[in-house]
Image (tube, rainbow, N blue to C red; front, side, top):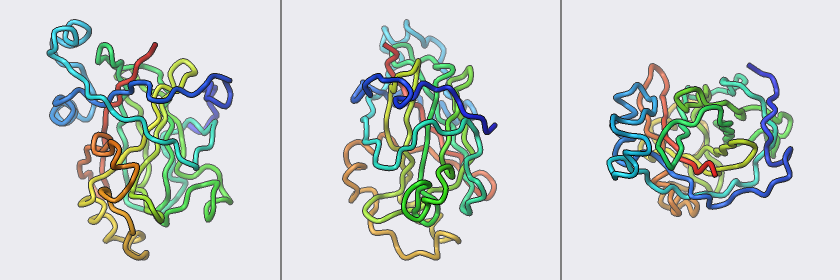
Length: 241
């Protein structure tokens, strides 16, 4: 679906952006095993919800807020497929949003993502300035709190490790701004293939990236192989008030 959404983004609604709002990532140890067992869908375990949080049976891990960066464009299209014919290794994203107070899914949150193409260019900037839309889009979370995107594995650009920008909007407020990462071993494997292999070696890996060092390990996607591409998943818990 390629229609524009009335998302009440920060540009449309004159409310201050929320920084370091206690955004939370995952369900502690549940994320690694639970997402895979549930078919990459974030589900609260038996005994979860407010009672589980109160008892300590369910815990969430604090995730760092990270810089929005210079490449944000507001009011992007609501659509699942954001590739626009850009070449690269297929990547499906399953980005879950949960209430940090209850670990329950948040329905109808707007998840906004943007990232570089295989050549390291962002739409609307530099080599990608002729287009303002490729590899950008917004999806609403479903009843299970999941926003799904069809894209390609991001490329690298000078001075940064490989990453995807993400912003979560709930009720017109930005409740999380962050960046999502991949393991260096996976990126090395992907970049041995075309079109990534046409470029020289990247100049920054995860440990050398100044933004990654401030919490990037906890913002790293869990990735599995799927056909010729990959599926990446992560759960992002947010405070709704």
